[in-house]
Image 1: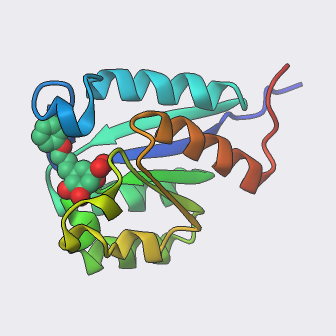
Image 2: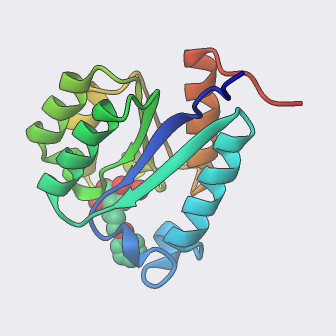
Length: 155
Ligand code: CA2
C-alpha cells in the first residue's frame, strides 16, 4: 500500500527576521532564525506534519511563497510578515486568495510597542494571531493550526 503524502505547513518569515539573535536581543531574544525553523520542524512533526520554512526580505517573494503553498496543497500557513504585517494589503490579499488556514505570529508583544504596530493586515486574513510569546509563539501557532485542521499528536 502506498504511504500517504506528508501534510505540509508553510512557515513564512518576513523582512529582517534573518537578523534574529544577531541584533535587538532585548526585543526579540537570543534565538536565531535557524532556531525558529528547527523548533517549527519539530513542532510540526509532533502532529505528523512537515514544516517548509522560508524567509524573505521581499514582499513579492513572500506572496510567491503563499501562492506556492496553494500549488503544493499545503494544509496551513504560519506567518510572521514582520513590518509588512502593518503595511501590506497585497500580503493580506494573497492569504485570503489561497484559502489556506493561516496563523499570524509576532515574537514581540506588538500591543505594548509603538502604535503603528497595533494594526495588522495579515491578522485580518488569519484565523488566529499570537504575539508576545517570543519564539514559543511559533510552537503554539503550529499546535493551534493542528487543532484547527484536525491533526492529532503522534503518541
Ligand atoms: O515581533 C515580531 O515578530 C515582529 O513581527 C517583528 C518585526 C516588527 O516589524 C513587527 O512589528 C513585530 C521586525 C522584525 C525585525 O527583526 C529583527 C530581529 C533582530 C534584529 C533586528 C530586527
